[in-house]
Length: 362
Image: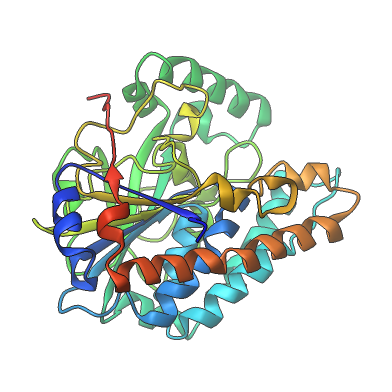
């Protein structure tokens, strides 16, 4: 049987998984990365988790954490009808059609429609008081020129941030402040570690603004100004700092952070994509089970590659073909969800899991 998934676990949980497998109650955090249209490869995995109730069958709550498209996936999972909400997100996002004349303002309007499509008024109270899940949505509050909607000023700020980030990721504090919008009675446990940022409670008054902000990539999309209950300012895509996995989510001892990723490499922040030496902070992967597609699965996809934001440009004159390809990726990804559940239920994950080698940046 062809293996379409690979499994890697951090040093604090690999022995546990090799001995006990992955009982549902062991998973207390689900982390979802940013990455634009790459998230379509996770559709089948998400659907399998939702249909099986894999994340909701335990006595305590599971933390759903992510930024950008990852945060949107988490929001759909916390809706009253998560499968329907997830499908509305998939369809709405994939059917976005942009032209060469689009501006940050028009693209923001499209994203606002996407949020409205998958996050209805009746969904919001259920999300805010979910019986099984707490949420942590990563965004950033822009500082100085990075808060400007003038493309020259904002572009200059991004270039300066990228240059300084190559020296140290802490320099991003000059341009962006981490903000996590959360549900639950108290901020999520990871903020008590090395988290440098602000915590804002999600409410009916700010949940749509937070959802839009976490997907508002700078320069391309307009920022979100002054969400209710948050410090005044312009809020943008949380992936700028928390791109794929850049937090020690610190699940309780003996439990696991489940991290389905679209690739093997874990990039901490958006500006780290070209910095091949940059790794997540030391200790942040210790309790992580990373699940990601193998080369054999990628070979099944159109063009044998993941969807990408550049597809909007590549197929700008043929959006029907782009949508067809993204739909095919989503449909094919059901294989991944089925394979994951089979590995867990049969216990074969115990022999499949490999060490998640971590060379943290400290």
